[in-house]
Length: 275
Image (cartoon, rainbow, N blue to C red; front, side):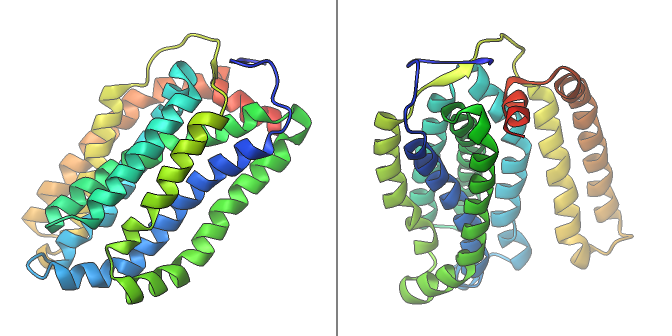
């Protein structure tokens, strides 16, 4: 086993599962509620166009997707509990800031912080769960962890519609704050630290940045395509750099991803052990 823990044994892994799954539930719930809250946000920020407001969703998704793999590597190197707590704290703080956002631009910026926090806590939560369970029960833990995310996605639209209609769109974000604060306090006391004993390189930062910029440029082209036209000079001017940046980022990340596939990163070996 490639993980060491500050304590030699965790008699009952289910409290760890509950705490880590709660954070996953918040992230998955927030994403679905945000779609429901979009109309209220558009009504509040009337000066911003629908295309501009779409970046509230786009920026979060791009940052979250781009940082998932490197965030998992950081958790392996520096401690899964530490990275998980940082992620929960950042996600909770960003949720509060989103609710108080005075402008669409501020909401987009705070959404990026939310995406960073979500990307930090997501892989760390799964790694903590796998480290807490014995090998023969990990497949059950992984299945239940995934089911929690599916449950949040299922109840999110209905719950979001009720919350937004009753309290307003800021509560699509404020709903995360009390749960996040309680979870943060409990996690700090209950979770055990774990990390990989194997040293390895840090994530490929240039590749991640270029890939994020490339995906962002491509998304901008799609969002603006209706107004610009698919064959317009503006669209092509934005689309081509996006392809170049995204392709360069993928090229820089290929060696790291290939090494992970061939030799296996610590977090991947945990998942393999769960099968």
